[in-house]
Amino acid sequence: MKEIGKYFIFLGNLFINRETFKTYYKLILDECLSIGLGSLFLVALVSTFMGAVTTVQTAYNMVSDFIPNYVISQVVREMIVLELAPTIIAVIYAGKVGSSMAGGLGTMRITEQIDALEVMGINSISYLVLPKIVASILMYPLLVIIAGVCGMLGGYLAGTLTGIITPNDYVYGLRSSYNEFTVIFALIKSVVFAFLVASISSYRGYYTQGGALEVGVSTTQAVTTSVIAVLIADYLLAQLLLAK
Figure 1 (spheres, rainbow, N blue to C red):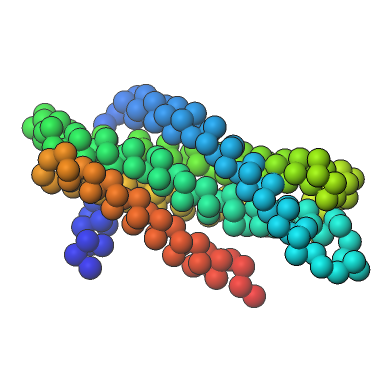
Figure 2 (cartoon, one colour):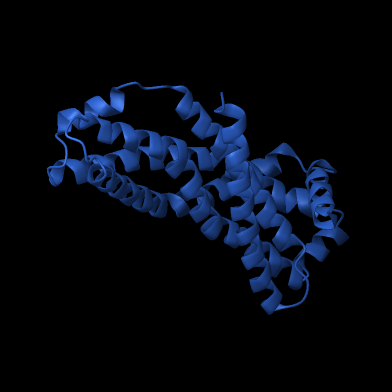
């Protein structure tokens, strides 16, 4: 309870004694470039192979000849949009971006750079953390969209090149019984996950105490706590928005 309370106080301090809009604009752009471009290749690679594997495994489990082949791409679409793209990529995002945020802030803490900002009268939490959270919320949904496209493309390549499914059947399955709310749901999850990963990782890094060894500990705690928070939020959002 103490950690949770400290975390919410940390979030409240984001909006106290803020800097000018121009300052945040430059900081947010730098963070967007670091988060977005730095994660693009990894997200595209992982999601492409997730789509390919999902297609092959779905076809393997289609044991009845009475089930049409286009159901394979239907299953792939639902799995990628609802779960694999937003949630599995969030775990990777926490490992890459979250650890980087925690490590950077932890290093600034132990080298007394954060203390120097406080002495200068700058709200270090708002100056250092707010741009990271805003950039994460802006960029992660875009990464999820790219992951969804790459996942379906990977499934298409795996299915058609191996002869599991014809191109026409795959495209027909993607379009069949399409529910646009699944995309909205995935984007809602991506915004929540982006906030959780950025805020929790920044919190762990900001309150690092000790030396270089503790920076590594804070980075590990940031990733594990972020992943747990993402999984809990995933269940709660599914229960709230999908349960009938």
